[in-house]
Each structure stands twice: as C-alpha cells, then as structure tokens.
Image (cartoon, rainbow, N blue to C red; front, side, top):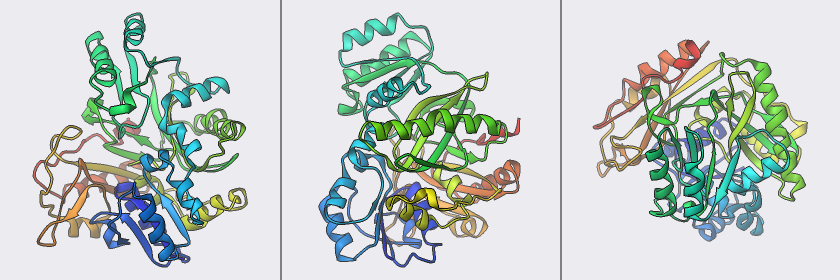
Length: 422
C-alpha cells in the first residue's frame, strides 16, 4: 500500500526509513518532509496544519494509511478530520491527544486514577501562581499548560529563575496561549527514563526503554531543548523497575483514557523519573513518537512497523508479535549555533555522504540549497545514530560518525549515554 507520513523532522525520517523496510509498503509520501527524508520518500509541499489539502492528497493518491508524526496537528484534531474523510489514520484523536496538549488535563487524570506523579497545582491567575510559588521549596518545576515545542518547562533552582519563568509564561506569553495556564509541581530527583508504547485502547505493547538528554550542554547544563541525544537500552536501570513503570503507569493510563471516553490509539510516550529508591513517577505523557527517542528505538525493531501500525488501527494489536534486537543504539544530535534560542539557517553541511556509509543519519532540520547541496534549516539539524553490541560500542560509533560531519556553528553534547557506562 501507499503511505503518507505527516511531519518533517528527525522522528518522521526514522518513521519513513523504518516503513520503507516493510514488504507491504509501496510508495511512501511525506508532507512536508526534509532533504534527508527525500532519500526514502517523496516529499510533498503541504504543511502539517493544511488538513484539507492533506486529506485531498491522500484520497487522490489512494494511500492506505496516514501516519501523523508531530504533536501540534494531533492536538488540533487532524486525525478526526482525516478519518471524517474516510482515511485510515495511525494516531490519537483530538480528545485523546489532550494527554499531551494539556499538562493540567494530564495531571488531573493521573490524580483521579491514583497513577504516580509529582504533587502539583494549576493556575490561570498570575498573582495566585506567584503567591503559591513563593511558599514552595526549591528546586521547583514550572510548566506551560499547552504545547511549546518541548521548551515550555523550567526546572528552577533559584527564586529569581522561578519568578522569571512564571512571568515569561503568564505575562510575557513567550509560549503564546500555551502559557495562559501553568502547572507548578514538585521537583523529582532521580534517573529519567522514557517508555514509548504502541497502544490500542487498553492494549499496551511497550517498546524498549530509552533515555533522552534535554539540556543543551554537557552535564545537563543550560536551557532545555527538544532533546540533544538518546540511547537504548538502559543497562543501569533494572528490568524490574522498567516493568513496574509499565504496570503502575503506562497500562493504568491507557485504561484511564478508555474509562474517560477518550480511548487512545497510537503511540503513548511516558516520560518518567525513577527515584533513588527505584519508584517510577510520571513526569509527562506525549501522544506520539518522541524525538529523538524514535531514532534509537526504531533501529532496534525487528518486526514490520507497517504491520504494527495497521494492527493498532484495526484494533488487533493484542494479536501480533513484536520483536526487538538486543543491539544498543545511541543518537547524538548535531544542532545549530544558538539553539534552543535563535540560530542561523542555510549553512552548507559537509561529510554527509561519508557518514551515511558508516551509520544511520536522520535529518531533523535540513533543506536543499540553491545548488542542490544539503544545508541547515532548523535548530536540531541531524541525529547521528550508532549501533553496537553494547552502549559503549554504539556510542563510539555514533561519535565517530558525528565527527565526520561539519557545518558552521555545529554544536553537540559530548556526554550522550555516559550515564549508562558509569
């Protein structure tokens, strides 16, 4: 069948790459795609919010499945629109995508169903939020309620930092309407962990755990980003803890969504914190593949991704086998100078051909230059993935390949996956 993937980042490149290996996949389209995705799919110049155009294109090309990558169109109800046009879509409907689209909704859901998470309060009034904040111990976590490209969360270690974050969100509206409501919650210490799962109502089929690195600089310093690198598996976190997280958080959340009349179908992504005593708690839920977690999880998938997507859409996820490789994967993100703030675009990228022969390169923010060369076109530019028998081997491969690639202003962390080797 022909497939349409919606999105244009590293996550969508990894999805297109994985789908291209399916014997059932014929033509793959990606809207809008990027310069790297163009190597495995036909890129279509339609934006992710042009729902009517996407529906018309999918019907015209008679695509058998539409796969929605990014969070914003999911929260805006793209699945409802496309299904209303008679299309088969992998992704949650609008009322289920709210688990990511509103942090307040997510926290209230977890509280109602007694699913472990940090203590919290939500506010729409700036003065009330200020007063509450002053009475809380540090560090403290402040979150814009709505979507903010992975940047709407501040972990404040000082009063000044906390007050500025609150003012930025609620007064200056640096995240627009996403900051009209904020969630203030207790700081959770421990090890971060991400569990992505294929979900079809109450059926949960978890993927191998991964760990992201959000701050832009080494040793988790600097502002939060959409993710500077990931790795999978997590040899330093006991399998029993991972299983406990699935049984006490991921599965109960899927059941809670069904109970609320919002059955979730798609990728449910749990961002978790493992406390020093081994107790998992929920930090966040996303309603789609994580970026860059997808870039280390899908390369470990031995089963057919298209078969899994179709099983989830058809309500038979419980009936299929899903196999994973024992191989380790490490992804190092190469970003533009200035990211996560403002950054230049159009910087020529060299070394891609050589690096592509040595390992997996997923394009996150690239475009074709006027001369046909590949240039930078985003904050996160490339995800360089190394595979190996263990984390150390995969990490060495990823960094060796990352060093083959250069562009003006290139920045990357040098400590991705180091925690797993301590």
